[in-house]
Amino acid sequence: MDNDNIGIMRRHGWRAATFAALLGIVAAGCGSTGAAQKAKAHKPTSHAATTVGLHTGWIYDGSVADKGYDEEWYLAQKQMQRSLGIKAQYVQNEPYTSQWTSTDLSMAAAGAKLLVDPGDGGSLFYAACKKLPKVGCIESNGVKPFPSNVVSLYDKNWLASYVAGYAAGMLEKKPVIGFLEAFPNTPAPVMETLNALVLGCQASNPSCRAEATSVNSWYNPPVETEDLNALVDAGANILGSTNNDPAAIEVAQKRGVWGLGSWGNGVTSGPNAFVTSQVIDWYPALAKLTKQFVAGKFPGGTIQLFGFGPGLKMAPWGPKVPAKVRTAADAIYNQMKSGKNFFCGPIYDTAGKLRVPKGQCMSTLQIYDQWNWFVRGVKVGK
Image (cartoon, rainbow, N blue to C red; front, side, top):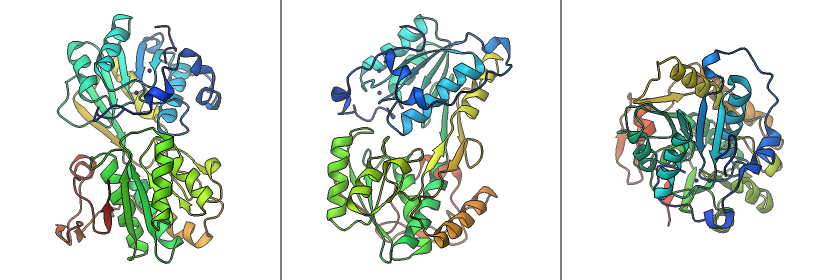
């Protein structure tokens, strides 16, 4: 495996991505196309000599040019190479099999001292990290228990989802959100994203409801497109998803409904449909963890979550979003940045059971990995 090369897949290893066979193994040359061309040219900065030449290994579940989740991580990887002087091996389209563990172990054998897992290999990643106690391991979207040399890194995506939902509620008289779950009934980020989206939507329009369906993959554009069209046929006038790519916006553009992005600025995928999206810059948090690792202060065994700030922003509003909607949703965004918690009771589940009483608010960790029920107004299909 050459530095900054290799081409291999994501998220807690719930099941293999069915689209991997179509994508194949993308070799190192990917680094010069797609996402690589979009990477900002960062002027190298002065940095501690101990970060220069640090060997790292990265595993992606999908394509680093997916116009979404994996591409955001890949841009952070490239920035770390430019700004911190690290060396990086990476693979994309890695299947959720024992190969995941083997790839991590091979990277470490080739000299990687820090393994980064944007693809959410979960137990497959942990199996390798457990055998490599001196290697630092950074994963995306993990939940405990995990080895003591693992740090789980993620954004508070529910904040952005609530803001997007609030705007969505103002865009339609009777909003029906057609939502594509990557995997069914999983906590971070599926349930928290959909729940936050619906709560935000209901805050501006109490009639808001959601119809959800699962595609059983983080990246399968053909199946996503089919399912999203079916949601529109069933009455959805707003589309959203947790999948890696902007399929929801692309379908919304073609069907004449609104589209909510899941990762990155999706306006180019559907300028007439795009409302907004979260935009994540993983670099600040990754750079901090990398510097802590080389300094011998790696915070292994912890979950690191970041909210609105350098690492998490909202994409600019789509050109078709009315000014009054932008103003109202921006006010919610500013209150969240100031620390206001909008996830407070009374909150009911789909069966009408009171889950969060009036006067109580959900904590960050409750939202992140304990929100295993859907809020009232959500109907889940297949």
